[in-house]
Image (cartoon, rainbow, N blue to C red; front, side, top):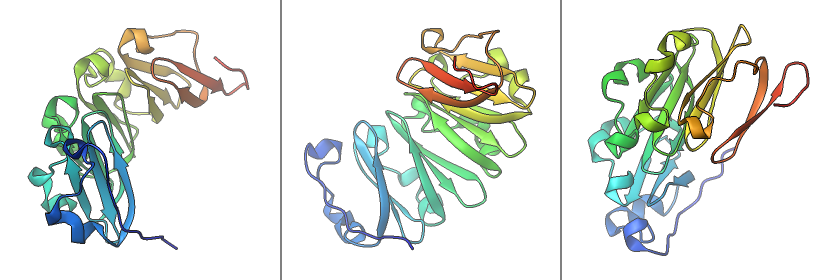
Length: 215
């Protein structure tokens, strides 16, 4: 059973604190959930349609992907300045600040199907595909660039996590791959293996390992 609601907003109108009149009827009923980033909001309706409002620079305007957001969205991910909609079939639709992950650019064709998980740093996003490959886009300094670890993330990845500055991936062979801001954990740690679960704060990671220990 899915609960449906109507939305109200208040606060700074330039950051989504006021629902535009053009959207008021659409958001008055039939909304299943909503999320917000730094200065914008996105809401999902019963049929998987996505409605956005707030600062256009942060994803409050989704006109460039209007057709893709009319239906079939079931999850919304976000970072500080961009949103990603998870659609049926494992397709991702991105909007917001292009440099912060609002446009996947050269990797867009890899995000049209088969995605099973998405996570974000403050200005980048990463997707895990059903074939064990990882795709990343957005600000290179916080994980949007896979170049240093590209070969290690083409297959065999079981799970991914992100904090504000870096990503970590756990692989089938027990190895761990990290990338992004070195100060936030985006540097290799040779002694870390066999991750079961990872916990993130803004600038660090902690994990439970297969042997029951913590790192």
